Image 1 (cartoon, helix red, strand yellow):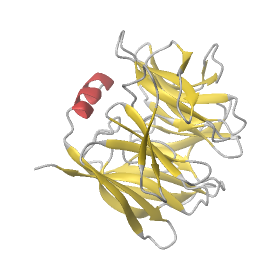
Image 2: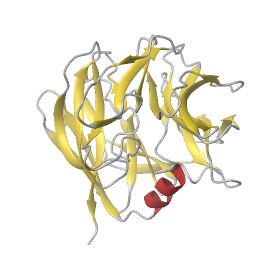
Image 3: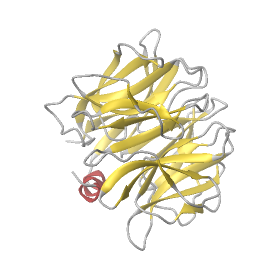
Image 4: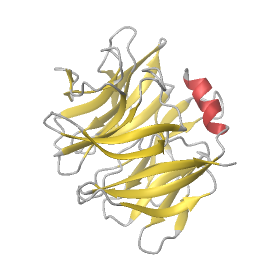
Length: 294
């Protein structure tokens, strides 16, 4: 499934969205709010007060205490997708927005409270996933010459650096570890989509999961101890696909490596946990499950 087909499918989705949290110790799931349209990919803010998510091309913040929703002003960027991250200091929001001129995803940065998005790179398509702990660098998946690989770039822009280059492989979902040493990502290079990590400069690429599943979007907890990700059944999707409306699992593994365990089963996939959604306490995850409209 190419990105244009996937984007068309996303726009045609007709689902209820359930914003939830999960306690990884007790397994308790808490429903925060149900929406009658598609929302995706909650980021938990550094102060623990808000969940930032996208819906209908816009960006929103849900306040956990008041249960109120406010739109984040993104001016011209009104076709934001589910690849967005928050700066380590909690003051900025980086988004991936389908630009009007060619409908390709490009990366922008703006204040978290809202403002004018500033273009990071004109190269497209680019799908943001990670922000380095020192605040200097963004990591993203990008298609260049028909192949999806992992790239990094300075937040201020400039030349991009390609970190992966395995012909025929799809590499996606790059995210920095809190210590800044590793970039975690997912790759089809072993046959199925699996979780990998590498040094932040692209060296020492190492497979971390060996699941009988297609595993996507690794997210490292703030304390650096755990990695969460979403797993699709192999009979449901091809390795390079992460569609919506599938029975999926949220899984948890030690960051140093080892066996994973299932912490939730749900109807979702695309949009459920595309970006890092750990709470600052490293105990809770935010995610979105879905229910089809009749």
